[in-house]
Length: 349
Image (cartoon, rainbow, N blue to C red; front, side, top):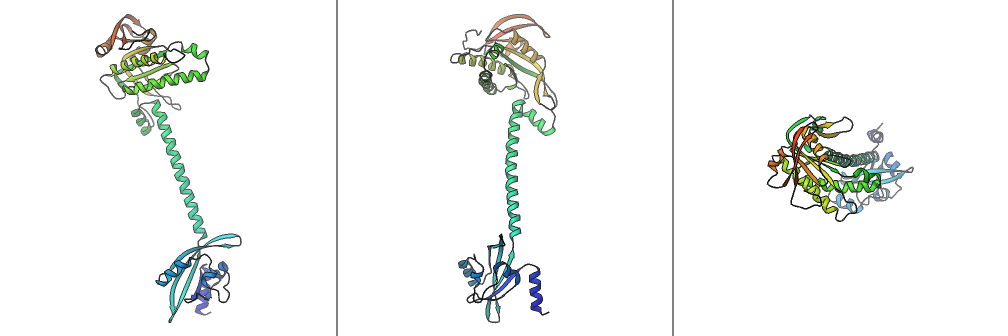
C-alpha cells in the first residue's frame, strides 16, 4: 500500500472530508470518500463553490487573496437529515502551482449539544428567576407575620429564640358589633370592609414606628418597643390609637356602615416568639398584652382606656380623663384614664 493510499485510509477512518482544487478556477483534482458522501462526487469541470453550496463566495475570495485560511459552515441534506458541515479552506503550493486544500468536518452533533446546552441554560435561568420571585414572595409573606429581625433569625437558624422585652407598649382594638354585621352581610363585603380598615391601620402603625403583630377576626394588635427598644413606646401606641379612631370617624362620614371601636392600651413586659412548627405564627405574650386586652373590653365605644402608669409619657400631648379605679382580672386594682387627642368624634373623650 502506497503512502497516498495509507493517508487516504486514515482520513476516511477519522471522518474528515478532504478535497484539493486548483487555485485558478477552483476545479477539483482530488476528493476523498467522506467529502463525496456529503457533497456528491464532483463532475468533470465543476468548481468548489458549485459543489459546496452555501459558501460565502465574496468572503472566500477576499480571505484567500490575503493568504489567510477561510472558515465557514454550510448546511446540507443527507437522507432527510440536516447536517452542519464546518469547512476550512487554505492555500498551499505544489511546486509553483497554488492549490486549495479543503477540510470538512461534520459538527452536527456539536451544534446539537450546543443547542441543548443553550436550552438548558435558558431553562436554568428561567427557573432561577422563578425561584427568586418565589423567594421574594415567601419573604414578603413572612415579613407580614413577624418583625424583620425575627425573620432574619428564622432564615439564618431555622428557629426563633423566645425573647423577653421589658419595656413595651401595646394597643388592642376591637370593632363593635362585628359579629352581628358578619352574620347578616355577604362575606365578600365583610372582608372588603375589614381589608379597607386594617390596611389603613397598618399605614398608621408604620407611620409611628410600631409593629402590627396580628389580627384576630375584628381585633387588631400592635406594639411599640420591640424588637428594637423605643424610649417613647407609650406615646407611639397612643398616637396610633387616637388616629385609629380618627380614621373610623372620618370614614363613617362617607361609608354606609358606621364602624365604632373600643381600644385598650397596656405597658410592661412581653415575650415574643414564633409559635408552631408547620404553620408559623409570631405572637406576643405577657402582662402588657393582657392589660391592653382587658382594658379594651372595658372601654366605651370610640374610647381609649389606659393605665395611669402610662400618663407621664402622654400628659403633654393628649387629653386625659379619669376612668376610675377598677379590679382587673389577673392584674389587680388599677387606676385608669381615658386618652383622646384634639380631634372630635361623636363619642370620643
